[in-house]
Amino acid sequence: MSDFYSEPLECLTAETGSQPVGTVIWMHGLGADATDFEPIVPMLDLAAPLRFIFPNAPVRPITINGGMEMRGWYDIDPGAPLAGTSDINSAAEAVNRIVQQETAGGTPGNRITLAGFSQGGVIALQLGLSAPEPLCGIMALSTYLHDHEHLAERISFANVDVPVFMAHGLSDPMIPITRAITSRETLLAMNYKVQWHEYAMGHQVCPQEIADIAAWLNQIYS
Image 1 (cartoon, rainbow, N blue to C red):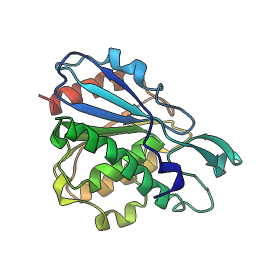
Image 2: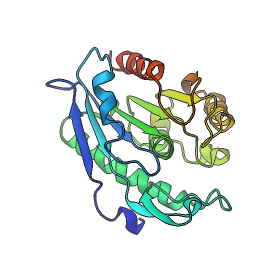
Image 3: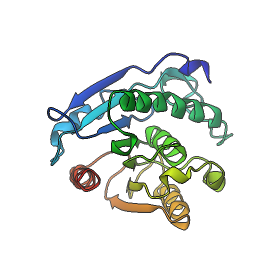
């Protein structure tokens, strides 16, 4: 495991009501932190109470940003697109420890959803598709599958039926929508159930997307 993941991840937690029926573990994007998506929780029109856990990625140098230190789940090096593989795996392991804590606390794996934006979505997909126990869902926002050409080598049959929510901005300047579409097509070719949404926006979240996320969460936690 990478030195960046030698310690447990710091997390923020929010609950939308007493006795949550499930947990959503939501990873932020590059340079953001655990507070990034916390304000969205009250905007979600949820039918049942849920627990939201927002982990902080470790602070690390990021090659694409000139080596500047910021919170990131893995390094991005434009000259070596697969260089982050080791840290992506380590990040997935670190998030899986949060999953294990939740299951130990009484929330079964099939009531846990992995969510993430941008880099965080890469981790949600990496862990969710390879998790040894069935999950409730995977939410991948403005993101992509890492090393999609070798996905078949790392998926778990426990989650072949996991619902996947994918959303992307049509004018995303950070992660072109074509990259997300390639990821979607890779999943569909392997018979994953993908709910796809695209919006007239950049690398961000919009009100319609928040409404669609709430509808999807209500569907998988019904």
